Image 1 (cartoon, rainbow, N blue to C red):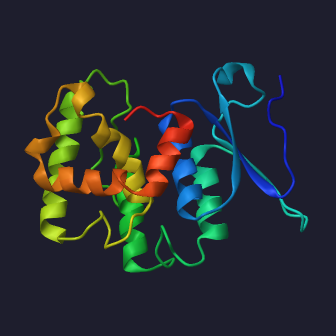
Image 2: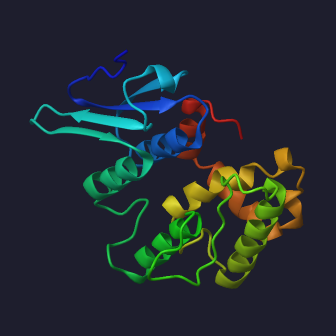
Length: 209
């Protein structure tokens, strides 16, 4: 079943309803003020692609982009459209490397350049309770925010580092954890979640936070 119809002159985003990956892509589109057409898919197994979200960009100038998978979609949007660095930093800068490090910390595999890096694979089915892994993450974030005195994880700008961590911090109550035990993290969470683009992206994909 092909559900991926393209619309010329408009970015089309196809995402699973209620999933954090689609919500983060929608948030980035909102932050960059890019017009897009959102298609929510309730049964991804019945579509003709296995790696959601999917982004299609068929512009009137002939540009035709067809990407699937969270990493590919996000990288394209930031490299192609975030020329003013609204949600990113200049490539190769110290801040850019810090953002990459935060992203890598949520990866299940250590990066060769940073084998000693803190890693928090909260989605892994490894027998470790989510709450225990979440507490370790929250402690790490709390300590960082206390030391950095910045509004966001990297500097004073909301980046992909913040957006990737947001759903895990939002899951505190459902995991039986009291987020207010981490005052700096609570302040950070409220600051990120109250951004208009975040509100719109979360609501559009029906992500429960």
